[in-house]
Length: 380
Image 1: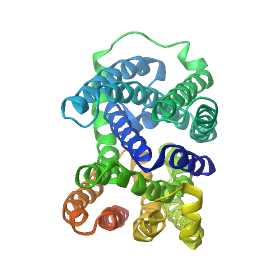
Image 2 (image 1 turned 180 degrees about the vertical axis):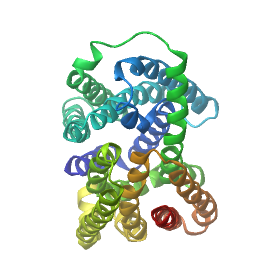
Image 3 (image 1 turned 45 degrees about the vertical axis):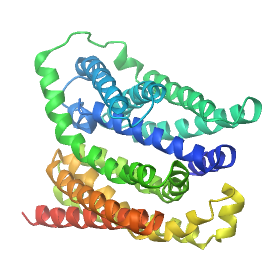
C-alpha cells in the first residue's frame, strides 16, 4: 500500500496532471488486455492445479494468452484508443502480467499464499525504486515511467518463475486439445466477471478523457488510486480465503470463515478510509502538486462504493474457490450497466464529481447483487 502511494506521488509530482492521466490510461489498457488473456485458464488454475499436473497446461496457457494479448492490443490501436507505441507497450506489459498471474494462481493452488502475496509487493517496490531513479537521474517524462514498468513487471515474472522452478523445469511442450478446451472453458467462466468488474472500475477514465481531458483523468486517477490502494488489505485476505475454499471439504466452516473475513475486510478498509478522508485538502496540494487538491473531495464521493466493494472481494473469491462463477458475472454485469449509464449522464453534467458518484453507485449495486446471490446460495 505504501509503495502504491509512492507511485502516485511520484507520477503526479514529476509528470503533472496530464502525464498522470496518460499513465492512468496506459495502465488501465494493459490491465484490460491482461484480463482478456486470462480467458485461457485465469483464476480457475487454482482449482485446476489440484486435479491436473500444472506442467501439462502451462505452455498452452502461455501460448494462447500471448495470441489473445496481441489481438487485443491491435484492437486498441485500430479503435483509436491508443497510439501505435502504446499498443506495443500494452501487448508486452499485459503478457508479463498475465504470465505472472498464472504463476500467482499456481502458488495459491499449491497452498503458497505468502509467495503469491509477495509478488505484488515486489512489483510495486521495484516500480517505485526504478521510476524514482529514472526521474531523478535521467529525465522526468512518460517514457521513463514506461521503461521502469517493463523492468518491474518482467523482474517479477522471472522471480515468480524461479519460485516455481520445480514445476517449470518439467514443463510439457505439447498442445493437448483436451487441455486447451478445459483451459478455455474454465477461463471464460472464471474471468468474464473479473474483466467486467475491471472495466467497471476504469470505464470512467476513458469517458473522462473523451468528454473532458487527460489532465482530468490524471486528477481523477489519483483519487481512485488512493482509494483503491486501501483494497490491498481486502485483496490479501480474499486471496488467502480462495485457497482455503478451493482445498476445503467442510461447507459450514467455509461459510463461517467467509462471514468473518468479510467483516475483517470491511473494518480494515473503513479504518483506512477514515485516515485518508481525515487528511486536509491542502496536504493533497502539497504532496501531489498543483491542481490535485480536488482529488481529496472526489474520495468522499468514492468512499461508500470502495467500502462496499471491500466486502464483496471476499464473497467473489469464495465463489471462485468453489468454481461457481455465474454469480460474480451477474454482479459485474449489473455494476457495469450502472457505470456506463451514469458516466454518460453525470460526467457532462457534474464533471469529475459525476464520475466519482457513478463509480460509487456502481460498486454498491454490484455488491448488493452478490450479497443477494450469496444469501440465496447459502440457503439452498
